[in-house]
Length: 422
Image 1 (cartoon, helix red, strand yellow):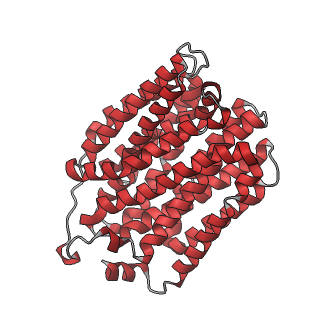
Image 2 (image 1 turned 90 degrees about the vertical axis):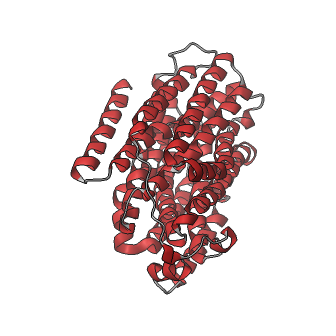
Image 3 (image 1 turned 90 degrees about the horizontal axis):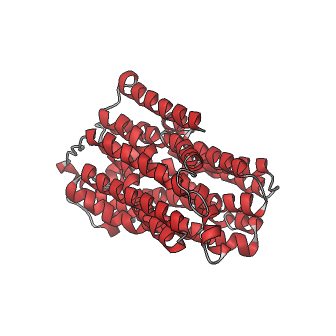
């Protein structure tokens, strides 16, 4: 396991060097590429061991997904303040605050595991979630760091690809460090390891340069938020990211409990499935930027929708390890296509002066829905079973399908619609 950690960190550094020296990416981009996986490691740690630990800490096993839910609620309620704070003090100071919150949450979770306190663990997860609101702003910091709008899809893909390292760093540090500290149910050391990751990120981020945004006077004054969100492209962008995140959270949250606690699959098999899922979320980013330029956002979105149909079919076909593996891998790729579509489409619809409030509202909606989905995941799983959980995703994927048909029927090009809307 230590070799996997070392190899992952080395590959991450080598990739950052390639971005800097070979692809000639701006310094901010490769710095963000290094920082993001270290900070994002918290999510796979909570996804992987949060439910398993909570079945031992919680007064009722059906509350096992509550820590993950609290993490996502913390993320959701912090998105608007995080956006406002970034607008006031800049991306760099805002993210440093987010890292400080993440460090506090990691140490609180470590303490909760040491003293077997479920409620302190819930508090820690809420802290970690709040910090994630600042982490999610990194993709917009990357967008702000490029001068050519044509590079937006490329840098978003690069930042999303960085998540593949979090897919391995999080679960590996959770397993490798879980016995660093003696605790009644284990895993206290996992959160100490997570705190170390955050400290490394804080050091690296010191070299980040605050992006300079030039306002275009020809775009006019800043518009009310109610007017901006009525644009068809804004609605489609938010739907794509929200439904992608919501459905992914619903199935991903339930999987470790369904696999390990209910079906009796081993912890290593469960770890492998979760790692494969998170890798599948980000690995397609190697090609999605090219796909967008070649076949367009509309077709990328439709592929994502069709992939989710495959998720449903496989998930309903059985509950062996490979059923879970294929379900979670296809789920990850589908999420990538939907979330990237929403992220790339959204900047087409706002002016530079409007970016913070639109981005914050976008993330607030996404992660509020994700929080609800993660909360329902445990309840539906324990009360109605895995199959019912899978069936419940069908209406939402139908909504996304018809939203994409609407996208296709917008006959004018995106560039033209952007000019008109702006």
